[in-house]
Amino acid sequence: MRIRKWIGFIILCISAMSMAGCSQTEDVNEENVEEAENELEIGMSFDSFVIERWQRDRDVFVAAAKELGAEVNVQNANGEIEEQIAQIEYFIEKKVDVIVIIPIDGEKLASVVTAAKKEGIKVIAYDRPIKYANTDLYISFDNEAVGRMMAEAIYREIGSGGKIIMISGPTTDSNVAMVNAGFSSVAIRSKEEIIDITYAEAWRAESAYIYINDNFSKVLNADAIMCGNDNLAGQAIKALSELRLAGKILVVGQDAELEACQRIVEGTQLMTVYKPVEKLAKAAAEYAVMLAKNEDMEIEETYMDGAYEIPCVTLEPIKVTKENMDEVVIESGFHLKEDVYMNVVQ
Image (cartoon, one colour):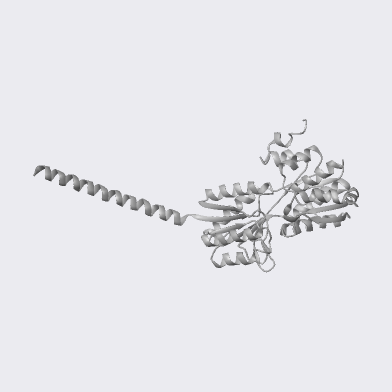
C-alpha cells in the first residue's frame, strides 16, 4: 500500500511539473509570436550593383534600419525593369510595411507602385524619382547642383569658349536630366559649346570607351568631357590614355569612387562629386521606419513627379578636386589615404 501511495505521489508531481512546463512554453511562444507580429519589414529593390556606391548605400541602410527595429529584404534587379516590377509585386504579396526603390526606369513603375499603395504599403523613391506614382517620399541629392559643380570646375580651368562633350547616363534615369540641366545652365552662362552628347544605356561604362574610339575627330576638338559618373569617366580616360590624351582633355565625373579619387591625385581626372551616401542611406532608413509607424515625417520640401507634389528630401553634394581631397574624402573616412594615394609618390 505504501509503495502504491509513493508511486501515486510521484506521478502527481511529474504531472504538475509537465503542466507548468507547458504553461511556460505557451507563454514564450505567445511572446515570440507577438514580437514577430510587431517587427517592421522593409523591402528594398536596387537597380543593380554595377555602380560601386550602391553596395555602400545598401549596407548603411540595412544597419540603420536594424538599429531602429526593422528587417530589410534586399533584392537586386540586375538592370532589368521586368525583374524590378516582379520584386515589388513580391513585396506586395509579403505585405511588407515599406518598399524602398532605386528605380531602373522612373516612368515604368507607376502602376506597380500604385498597386502597393492600394494595399496600404508606403513607398520611398531612393536617389531617383519615380514619375506619376505619388510615392510617400523622394530622397536624393541635389542633382542639378551636381551638374553645376561639374561645369564650374571645367570653366575654372579653361575659361569661356571651351568645347565640351557630354557622355551621360541613360535617359531612363530621371537624375540624368537633372544633372544635365544643371551642367548646361552653367555651360551656357560661361559661353561653353557642347559639341556632342551621348547617353550610356544602363550605365554601361564601356559605352564611354567605345564613344571615344568611334568619335576620334570630335574628341580631338574637345577641351573637356563631362561623364555622368566615375565609371564612365574611368573608361573615357582609359581610351584617352591609349590615344595619349589623358590629362590633356579634362574629364569630370561624380560619386567619388576610389579609382576616380586615384585618378584625380594622379592628374588624369579633373574632379568628381562626393555624395555622402551614409547620410542619405541613414536618413532614408529613419524615414522608412517613420512611415511604417505612421509617424509624421515633418518634411516641408516637395517634388513634382509629373502628376503629384510629393514630400522630398535633398542632401547637398560636395565638389572634390586634388586640392580638397584630404579634407572631404579622407577625413570623412570615405576612402583611406593610403588607398587614394597608392600610385602617387608623396
